[in-house]
Length: 412
View 1 (cartoon, helix red, strand yellow):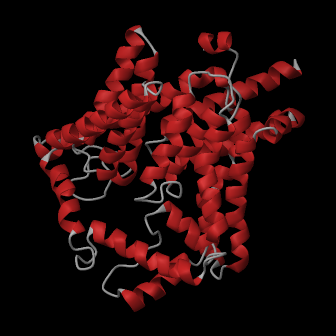
View 2: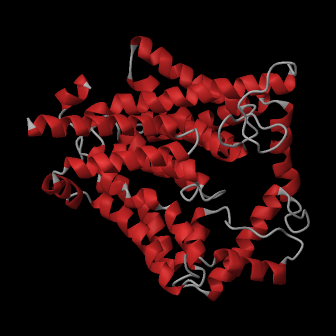
View 3: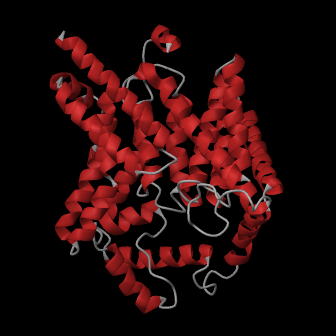
C-alpha cells in the first residue's frame, strides 16, 4: 500500500513536469508555482536512497550543480548582495536538477514532447491572430500580445524569447517527423511548417537564424555516415531555410533583417541601435573582464561595474544589466572558472552520455547544446527565464535517466 501511494506521487510529479513543458513559451510564474508543488510532493515521496543513487551516478547532474554553486560562491566577493541574490535566483533551475532528474520518467518522453509542441502551436495560433489583427483586420478584438513594441505579435513573451523557442520547437518537430510514421509524422511535420511560417513574421532575427542552423544540423545528423553528402546537404538546407524565411517575411521582419547590414557598417556610431549596442556592450564587458579576469566582479556587481565603464567609455549609450552574451556574462560575473563551467554545461552532457544505449534521442542530445551555444552569442539565454527553463527541461529529459531497454522504448 505504501509503495502504491509513493508511486502515485511519482506519477503526479511526472504530470507536473509535463505541464512545465507546456508552459515553456508562456509565463514563467506558473512554472515556479508548479515546481514548488513538485518539490513538496518530491519531499513527501521520500525514497532518498534511490534518488541519491540515481543522482550520484549521473555526472551531468554534478556539472549542473557545479555551475549553480559557483555563482553562489561568487557572492563572497560581490558588493551588492541584493542584486547578487537576484542573479542566483536566475540559475535556480540548475540547483533544482536534483528534483527534475529524479522526477522525469523515460517512458513519458512522448507526452513531454507533445506538451511542448502543443503549447508552441497554440502560441503560434495566437501570434498569427495578432499578426492578422495588426496588419489586415484592425477591427478585430485585440489579442493576447506581449508589450514589446507596436508590431509585436508574440502572445506571452516577446520575440527575444519567442523566436528561439519556435526555432528549437521546429528542430524537435523535424526530428520527430523523420523518426515516426503515419499520421504522427504528418502532425510533427505541421509543427515544422507552422514554426517556419510564424518565424517569417515574428521579427526575431535570432529565431530565423537559429531555425536555419538547426535544420542544417539535422540534415547533417541524418546523413552523417556519408560526410560529404551530409555537409553539402546541410549547406543547402541552411541556404534554403534562410532564403525562404527572408522571401516570405513580412515588411516589419524584412526591415529588421535589413538593419543587420546597415548597422554592421556603423558599429561605433549608430548609438543604441540593436547591433551596434550589442557590440558596445561586448567591448565594455571585455574591459571589465580584463580588470577582473580570474574571479569576475561577483554575481551582484555587473550592473554597477558596467555603468562605471559605460560612463567613462561610451556615455551616450544606454547602460545594461546583461551584456546579451551568455559567455561574456559568466566570465564577467564569475571569472574564468565560471566560463569553463558554462562550456561544461554545453559540451560535457552529450560527451558524458555518448556511450548510453541508442534510444533514438542522440540527435537531440547534440542539438540542444549546439542550439544554445549559437543563440547565447546574441543573448544570455540561460539567464533569461523561459529559455533557461527550456534548457533545463530538455536537459532533464535527455541527460536525466538512462535510456530504457529497446522494447520499453518502443512501447513508450
